[in-house]
Amino acid sequence: MNSNFSVVFWTALLTFTAIWHSSAAQSSHFPAFERLSEPLQTELQTFHLDTLSDAIELPWGIAFLPNGQTLLTERDGRIQLYRNGIMDPEPVQGVPEVYAVGQGGLLDIEPHPNVEDNGWIYISYSKPGRGGGHTALMRARLDAASMPATLIDQEEIFAADPPTRGRVHFAGRIEFDEESFVYLSIGDRGRMEQSQDISNAAGNVYRFHDDGRIPQDNPFVDNPEAIASIYSYGHRNPQGMAMHPGTGAIWTHEHGPKGGDEINIIRKGANYGWPVVTYGIDYDNSIISTETEREGMEPPLHYWDPSIAPSGMEFIQGDRYEGWSGALMVGALKYQMLVRVELEGEQFVSEERFLEGIGRIRELEMGPDGYLYVLAEGPSYLMRLVPATENATATATATK
View 1 (cartoon, helix red, strand yellow):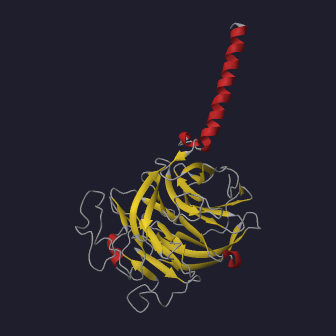
View 2 (cartoon, helix red, strand yellow; view 1 turned 120 degrees about the vertical axis):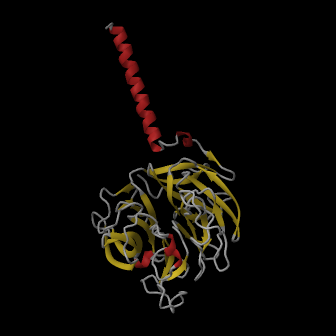
View 3 (cartoon, rainbow, N blue to C red; view 1 turned 90 degrees about the horizontal axis):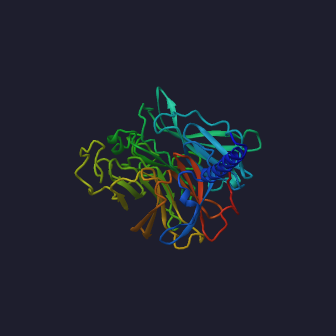
């Protein structure tokens, strides 16, 4: 080979390799959407996506602690801890064994409203038992001084019974209201008729005191045939739950079958109709019900047809996002996008869809810094939305 040609060839190859690696490094920050390195314009807001970490797998829940630490659940049974700008080298220890089958596993995580004083962190998961599993709720404290960090003082709040071999509809969202009552959603576990039976643990939203006691003003405490912790029933699979910051009401969304995803406001003792009333059909196109409403059954505030497969929801608070304050943000698994729902009181006004194709959005949470944090899977990321007028890396609370 000619020596001059050799020099030119190897110089060009090294230059190309350097450029390729540089491009790969940039795109690995957001490999699914290189175009989002530029500001994204929506109807009312322009923002950057700040990718904080891709070192997570199948994320499901996120909890911000008052000391700047962040906990992330992974469905196959791990809790990851971010602190001081980095992720701990080992996952949190003391996590309960989970029934990681189908949609089951380690699910949501939520700090007590007074966690700074009492230290309690609430965790939902599918608990194994008798050859199957069912949804359970526990609480524990985090010993972050140990290495690795460890869950201590574990207490079981509730375990749905009996376990089943079903692989779907564990739900598992956790939310607190203004009085520190804790709510838990459980899906129909793939057997739709169970949602109309208040003696059955599936298809309900539950309400407990923070220590697991059953509130005496729960709607079915005096019904010997009912599970006393049930607060509402007739649900299919509610994977989004948030407290309205203005009214204190608990809102949920739930998966329909083929069509008929719903947003609901949870009311004491209400029946949300599944499967007696629905806006969806079954996956084989067969009719589940010819009725979309019936007296005595709560209609949805809004429904989607076709389905978006909603997961995760949060009300926008604060003034970081101009024009978005008070809006309801919903993640979507099917179209891999965010949906901004504009409301007037308890009425749906309109929606805006954006970030389509970003990944299966699993959870949304307002951070203590006022940013909206997003957990996505396939690929898995922890991200936050940063207004384009701000420095995307200036005030991160959780980084890779």
